Image (spheres, rainbow, N blue to C red):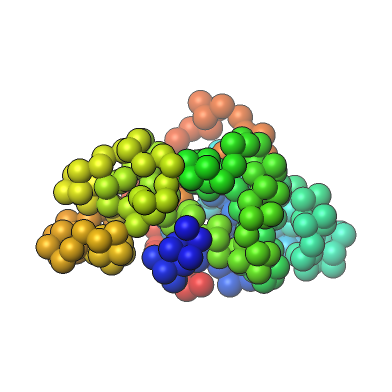
Amino acid sequence: MNRSLAEAYPDAHCELDFTTPLELAVATILSAQCTDRRVNEVTPALFAAYPDAAAYAGADRHELEQLIRPTGFFRNKTTSLIGLGTAVVERFDGELPSTLAELVRLPGIGRKTANVILGDAFGVPGITVDTHFGRLVQRWGWTALTDPVKIEHAIGELIPRREWTLLSHRVIFHGRRVCHSRRPACGACLLARSCPSYGVGAVDPEQAARLVKGVEAPRLLRLAGLGDDLAAEAATTAKPVEPGGPTPSETPVAPRAAEPAASAATDESGPSGAAR
């Protein structure tokens, strides 16, 4: 299955935009209970205003809150970002550390976020157990465990360490495009023959094909053996992927009612993501 995922998603990658380890840490903190797309709309202005850890440490709280408001839970996230900047300046001379043990001691960074940073910013293999990853490896029968840390260790024993980071991206890509939470496209999945959960979603090929999302849809349908006609239709009708649906936060957040929602204008505006 891992080999099939590698063939299906040769370009799988982190869908948060960043250029430095600190930027990735900040973006990942903002992605809690927020989509990657929304985070990528916010971060260009944020990264320009706060280029280093010292800038976050000395940030005006109100100004920082307003910049990240569209990502939700902005007060809690502001606390994490200011705390992160302060800790990085005081403990690590302004440079984000590159070990799991050091990262998880920083404000706003738990094990999942640390593995994202290690894998994508420092090239240190890590398994990121988000909601997509946990759901899919359970559906595939790779593990029956539900605790994210236990899942991480269990899958780490199955897959060579050098592939951990790419495996995480491939599984997340598949969860966003084919193996959806509520309506998985079982009948259009290239893993159907080896999946013990085949049938929990639509099995009719035409119905399932319409559930596959993203620009990769035509190629994914061909890999699933559905032929050129459905692939051609998917090229014009496939819905876009919403990168990164809300995922559980690793830091305590207040109830949403405690933080006013961003205005409609704020929600629908903002520059597109910066180049990775």
